[in-house]
Length: 121
Image 1: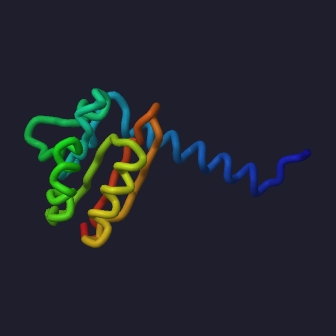
Image 2 (image 1 turned 90 degrees about the horizontal axis):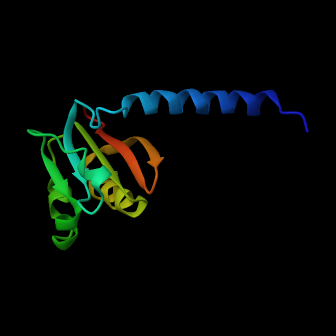
């Protein structure tokens, strides 16, 4: 089977996009422009995103509060996190009505590292 040109171009675009995303999440961890970090304290790789001076929400606490902090978040800016897929869906559901849109997501092991940004920024 011979690869078609369209398939080849899609593969190249996907590879290039993944490289750019990987560079953004390189060893420094959290993006410097994050207005909020969402993490799960059960996973050390998720907790590593938290930086001093950046507001953070622990999903272990948030689940018990029925997602009230995230549903009430209105500061705008960029929200980043490293969570399971189910938690990412919950975060998106909480922030979507406020105009936040998923900008990028990448699976890294058992977690997804993602970035959600306010459309009004």
